[in-house]
Length: 149
Image 1 (cartoon, rainbow, N blue to C red):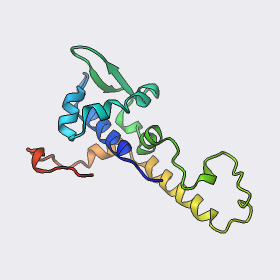
Image 2 (image 1 turned 120 degrees about the horizontal axis):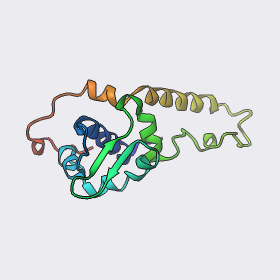
Image 3 (image 1 turned 90 degrees about the vertical axis):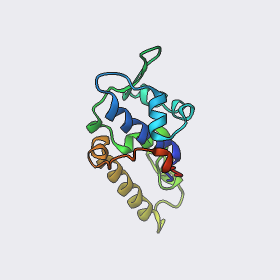
Image 4 (image 1 turned 45 degrees about the vertical axis):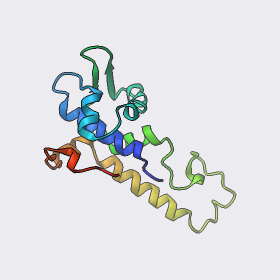
């Protein structure tokens, strides 16, 4: 259950859009500059958010991206699931019914179920709005602070 760069960058992208959309669309070029993320890389994972009704996309001169859902209703769990797909701790928990031949007596299964529940509960409890509300001021010159992660 590794949270990839894609999920981390998607949460930064969506938070940036929420903070800058001001009744309009935010250009990917501006998001990329502020977040120090490749525009092409971000564009590669916008489709699932558009399909889920979270992100509006407008092409053309005044185009860009905007949230269709308030940031208070978008959770890190949703973002992780849309970018990562499966968010299960172990493969035997991927199906609605555990078909592992050992599941009836597996001594470690309760630990993996507990881990999965704890991660899901936590990520479902964190919204984009909470991230925005606790955001620290951005440095004036982002070039002095390469992300690296």
